[in-house]
Image (cartoon, rainbow, N blue to C red; front, side, top):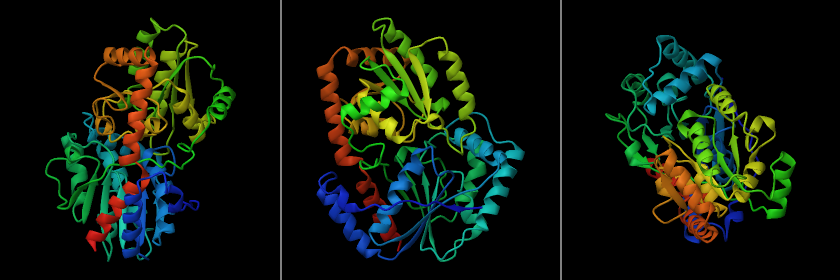
Length: 410
């Protein structure tokens, strides 16, 4: 059944002087026009991914602005989450389709959750494929329904898309990170593009002085002041952690003392993560300078903050990517990024800003060596990336864009 997620209190006043003033002003005006609106966000997990991080910050801020907002997550069996992970991969282009049993598990679980979607909401915002079938199972009632797709569905597996597409019929609007992500023959007429954003006041992004950050990583076991590069991501094949290890080993031929930290999160809706974790562990087990860290071993948001601040370079070698929040997270801290030319990453790092975009293991290694060998260039790229995040990818801008959409749907 759907479970309500409890969140803390947050005030938009805290963003004064951090986010652009004109964005904060428009956000407050939009919220006044929607005062009292009843909104529910539905996704598949309360922790371990970018969607849950966004909702944990967004929901209390929207409440502070005078809206009545709930966040609910789906309940489901292991069969359901295995099916939705297969669906997720297939929608990003994996050739493996869902089996009949997986399709049945999806339908059954969505129907069970739909029975517990109570409350007279004005807006129902459904995130990603897992709960996409709620509208057809529940019925629209008096609410406006929005499907928010956070992944790259530009070239979906045809069988998987044929399965999901009928569930999307009837939504009032759909939101994608980029227009290029809209799949073929899309059944929703109203389509918007809204880029995600990071919360600069969350524990993952709040300011940490270097002394505190060093103390945190020393407690974890990172050898400081030794040289460090890091990738922060789920243990997911689309993030290419094995490719990161290969690129790092090429760099080690020039910088023998360099450490690599692979910092990953295990999420409730991602059973595949354990298999990828095993593969990465095996690939790195004989190299003492490669270390794996997860949220299940005490490495949470504050620790990630410290890794992103103290790494000389952050790597995000994605093959497919929806947006890649970790890129903006790292740039916000002034750390340059070497990232795959995938999805929403180039949007965050246009040419000459933030770091280097790469398309192969060799390019990744070359870009890492360039930045590790030129501290002035690395600083300039990190500073330009921080300025771009401030202007385009902070949470108030995201909320403004979302409230613009909800206002128009009324």
